[in-house]
Image (cartoon, rainbow, N blue to C red; front, side):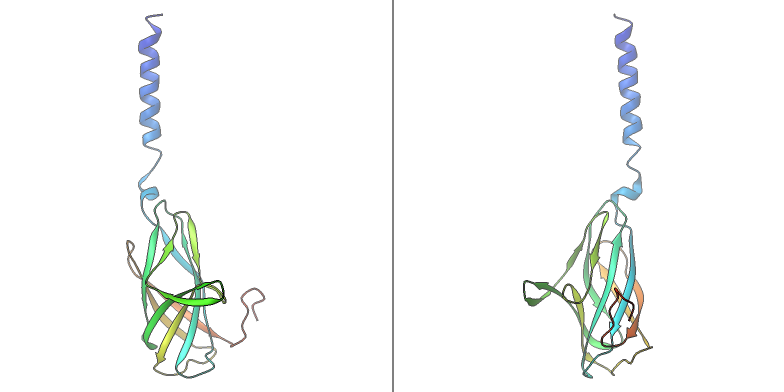
Length: 152
């Protein structure tokens, strides 16, 4: 039996080292990408909404802390809680998850538009995060009644 103890210890130590290496550096930081971005054509000339999805394939969460755009003087983050819209200072992007901006939920508000964007144009937006570097996206302007589920 004494010969088995050193062998078991060696196997246990080797297994622990192998498992420690399985985490990989990609699992300890956010890995963000953005898709499904669009802006419904604004009805008025001074305000617009924006929608998109931030996907995080990394093993650490991040936070969307602000948004900037040359299209407006100010872009604010909003979430819908119950029936009311509330401005927030940041929104979480969970590890191995996503942050969804959609009509009736989280959304951007472009305030004091410099000019009214029209269908077919693109609005450049820069997303700023707590951990990750900024991400610049092109947000196509769709019809005011655009529904992403149907594409119309």
